[in-house]
Amino acid sequence: MSDWLGMAAAPRTPRPELKDRVLRRAQSARRMRWSMLAAAALVGALAGGGLFWSRAARLEGNLAAARDTLDLLRQPGGRVLLIPVTTAGRPGAMTVYADSLTRRWLITCHHLTPNLPSQAYQLWFLTGSEARPAGVMPMDHDVPMVMTLEVPAGAGKVTGLAMSVEPRAGSKAPTGALVFRVEL
Image (cartoon, rainbow, N blue to C red; front, side, top):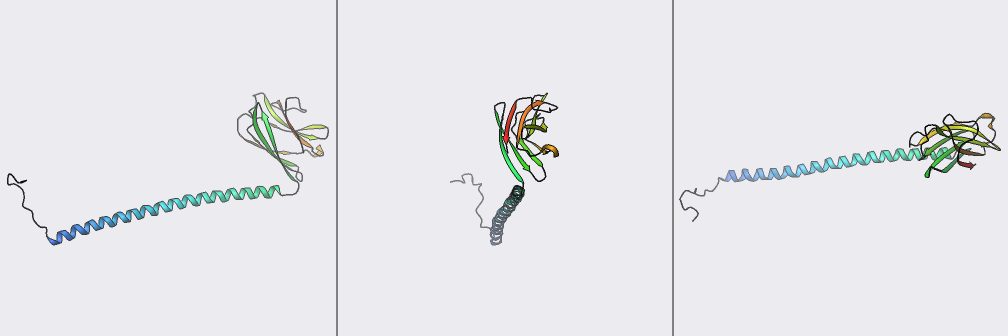
């Protein structure tokens, strides 16, 4: 009934070699698809392995730094202080590594409120009954700061540390607001 005009082509059976050729082409396409999937999986595995390797290398570096820090802290004559500091109602902290053998102090400051342009934080070595200037820290920006201090030769035994707000150039004796005072 579909050939109502009589114009439809008569069905023909294809040659046997044509059927084999079509089946071979379909099988090679299927093999190519699987090989593409295998190649994509290999690339994904290599990329994942590279990311894992770089992460492991970074963690090894962090571990080595932590071991170095612990070795430094285990040396005789070393002392570490963590000093909570609140400036302008904002909590912050200072870390002090005091080495009594070399008489050097390594100080880090975190989250301290920046100073006014005419002011700076000043650290003081406390030696018995007097405060001796240790260092001036002008905090212009809200970024961590690291500084090294040397205890002056004639200072005697340092019994504590204090910090006050002073003029930008510093002063010879504490005159401004006391931020903290810590006894060792």
